[in-house]
Image 1 (cartoon, rainbow, N blue to C red):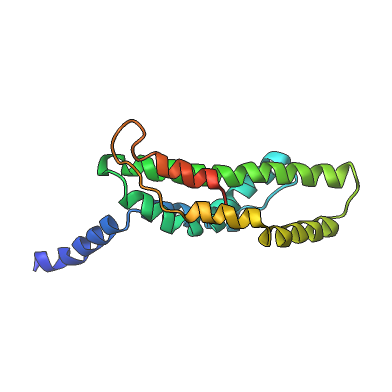
Image 2: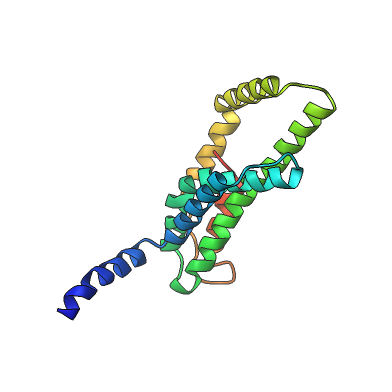
Length: 170
């Protein structure tokens, strides 16, 4: 009877071993909980912290398939560091964009007196224009070109996360 009680635990352990991206998924859920629990203030550090939480909560789920790919194509000894490096680089690209966007928003509203509605309209128009550019299409082709990753050597397990992070968000 004791063995029957351990069966669900063994199944759960096996399922977690086959899903190496679960720590990132837990981080995403924690970011959502923090976003719901906290209210952003008007200070710049709080805005950047809120931006970072939003990025982890909203862009983290988009990265889970890539995190799984990195994990399953890494050596077991390097798996956790490869996942951490990939996810940190992915989030760092978005946080870098957030620094630029929040700074531009602060300068536009305080220095130029532009309203938030005008900034939103301009940002949406710029995003729509980006979607139809050949530069975006080439970036996507380069992003989805499958390159072999070497699992061994000094760069082993680190080349793939760096390539994906350098390509940036689609």
